[in-house]
Length: 218
Length: 75
Picture 1 (cartoon, rainbow over the protein chains, first blue to last red):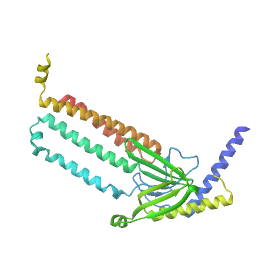
Picture 2: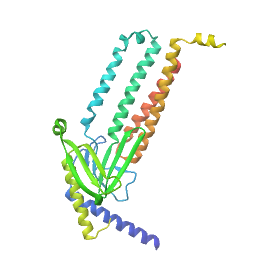
Picture 3: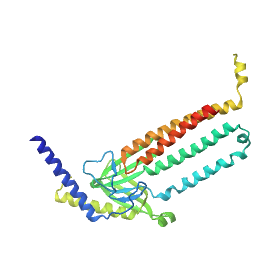
Picture 4: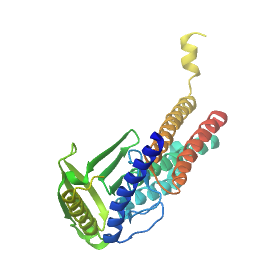
């Protein structure tokens, strides 16, 4: 009897949560690419995070615009070509063939590590907006990661900035979210379509306020 | 062997060999840490097809170990 009662409660809760997501689906269009390296997607399939609640759905998935990677990609290409001029340096040229092989392989390995570290910095720096909260996954370097969250009802102000030739041309910018949570400001830096993100957030805040007025609890 | 003969046996190539192996060893540790961090991050945020990124980390660690062993054998 108790088990039936419990499962009934769980199902009701799930229905209520899904209702909020359904409402969001009505007002927010499905946008963005669906592949692994996308930097903007609404309602992305199969994206979930460690602290996600049951029934909580990801509404917006964001990463920095891919163009921000241009600097290190050019740097890595230059580093790769550098190995072809090793032979002109006397200390390298005088080394036995085995040593030259190890030095060149080591150099390529170092470039691979540099590329992977930079790529990870972009790939794992993720911003999520769910139907309940804003999540900022920071990956500063291979030794440091941080996941910050703030509830939608704790958001006090959303501001969008897009300045500079590159940002205007490629259509990316920053979204600053002031909150009453432990982390007072969330910075979604160099994200694509910042205006759309701002609009979605404002719409979600409105819906949240409406839910609170109507007395609906998630 | 007395200390003077040990010092006399040290060659420039010997120093380069030790330095290269040490550098590659440090890099292998770094690659291992990177691989662990990728696994931790893909657990923190799960995405479709994220095994590709995990595979990149494992490949980098594998290459680091391979070059380290090659260096030990060749040098």
